[in-house]
View: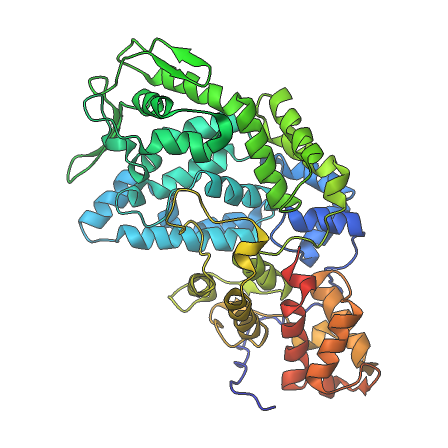
Amino acid sequence: MTASRRQPARRPGRPVLTYAGRSSAGLGAADRHLVKRFSWGLTPDLVAQVRQAGGGRAWFEKQLSPARVADAPGAEIDDWFPTVAADAKQVFDDDQSEVRGAWEVATDLSRWTIARRIASNRQLLEVMVDFWSNLLNVSLFHEDSIFWRTDYDRVIRANALTSFEKLLQGAITHPAMGLFLDNAFSSKDSPNENLGRELLELHTVGVDAGYTEDMVKASARMLTGYRVDVYYPKFQAFYDTRRHDTQPVTVLGFHHENSDPDGRPATLAYLSYLAKHPATAERLARRLCSKFVSDQPSDDLVQTVATAYTTHGTAIAPTLRALVGHPEFAAAAGRKVRTPTEDYIASVRALGVQMLRPVKDESFANAMYWQLSELGEAPYEWPAPNGYPAVDAAWASAGRVLTSFTTHRSLAARWWPVDEVRFPTYASLLPPMPATLGQVVNTVALRTMGEKPTPAVRAGIAQLLGIPLSTPLTRKQALGYWTIRGILTSLLDSPLHMHR
């Protein structure tokens, strides 16, 4: 097999990045499982952090309080994408004056999100931001909410590990959500039911809670008053007491006279009630269990998590503690398929890629966006209100697998993207040489993925390369173009990596 592309020469003056003395191995099976479920993939640095914390559960506890986690790598990423920090008015003004299109800011939000998931030490936070962003989805490039999308992301991030009550109140009353689901133009004279319905169906109690069409209408009436102008030069979000419907509201046991033209206190009380509703507790518990344990969690697991959620007033940290403390969590290692985004980011982390400040569209930190777009799961781009699916079947098609395999090869062979990035030397992945192919495969897997591959994976790599596992290899042979690249690509293609 001959190489179709040549590896770019290393630029002079840059220190060599190696795996020497560093490995993603070193965690017991239970710790490795916990960390893989609540991070975007193992790295030598992450393994060191877990061991320094005193194990997986101690690391998990610290991660539940992101402010306690020093995050210089995340801060560096923040500095690369300053447009993400702009307020909605600035995004709108720059778009109208053609200084910078709102779509460019939205694309930067996606790139910043990917980069933070790769580099940040606050891995659990990044995982939960993704989870809640799908539950409370606002599509990234929606025509009107696009101006508010970065601000909406800040609300999700600020509340991702606080309580669902606070998160729901912040998200549902946010201008981005109001624009995405038409509540920003709803009024007592012309109520729009879209957000009122999705609040019940998708965001809280679910379709089986027993609400009626009259309750959907009441839900929509309660949300009137939250308005957004998206016209130049008058661009603002405000509450209009003249547009709020002041009729009494009754929904699933909640009743409010709602007689004050300023309906915001009543709305917050309504959202609080829905957040604490038993149907919401069970629905969120099942969704959390499906994401972090298995597609078909037991009723016992779901009820354990729902009870913790209710007992602690919708607080997210104790809810997650109940999930990881259940025996079913420990038994679920390796049984979830990684979504394309999880796969991609874990691949970059496993390969030891070190991004540098992007300076052009082809820079690694920018070009990643196009790879994720091809994989079909670029952050926040699901067009419907229900967010990207989290069940395995949604991401197990032949097309998805083949696209992932193509991306794995591009990354492992260092074909594209290759600008503004550093890769470890291939030689630093190897054991002391000479060594058998089997020893090389084991060492490469331990240093990149934290565990040895199964006999079936090892046999598959040997078959691909046409070399028996017992064959001794010299350093030069192991570093042959398709030998080391074939090993890396095959490991990424295998269940060892594609499952978590």
